[in-house]
Image 1: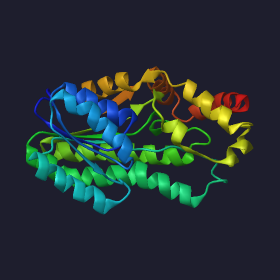
Image 2 (image 1 turned 180 degrees about the vertical axis):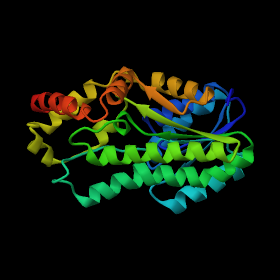
Image 3 (image 1 turned 135 degrees about the horizontal axis):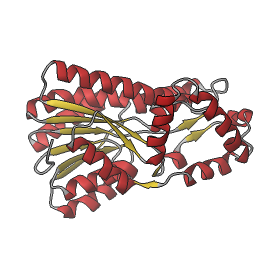
Image 4 (image 1 turned 180 degrees about the horizontal axis):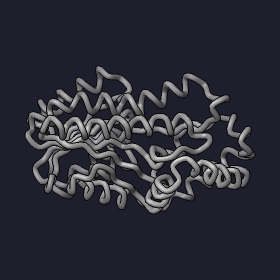
Length: 280
């Protein structure tokens, strides 16, 4: 997809953060937008920011963990816009806990949004992307879809799953000669509100975290890339039909670490996290 001009993009989690900046960046390229989020106030704010850009914008409250809502939205997007060329399965949440201290309800919550939301979004929109004659699926994994860290088992699980799902999808699309491609995005620390709004378990204290609030703040301070910079990197990746897009120096550095030390990296991460967590 060499140009976004005149295309139609559907974006989940568009009420804030990466979803909002993707919408603004795409609108600046002349791309029409179908936006969704569970946060109707944030979604309306995004629509208000995008509307002056001169592209058609529609919006709908959608819980991506609810399959029937995602499928209904996909059909509405095509009914409203006449086609859909891109879907950005961007909606996501964060959760921190030890595995022993993990509550199953929290695990089901994050899997429903971070993984099933991607699956539903992909499968609901894929027939429409095929019908457009030029389509692209963009699924949001994470740096934590490349390597694992303590206290992030639920998040790691969902983001590794998104990676595997998207890579298999890309291979199948190529085998079948589909007019659709797929890109898996692995952002590092991006300056959005995902960490601030994430769930954090008291069980992290078993790993040496003394103050959860301080740990959350310290984690956020490590985020270096702005959402605007990340959106540009992602869209350039789509334009060059990249299989994988790494966003941020931290993602690139730790990707190299995992490649060089595919199993032994765990010792490096363990030592680093011991120091970091005890500072929190």
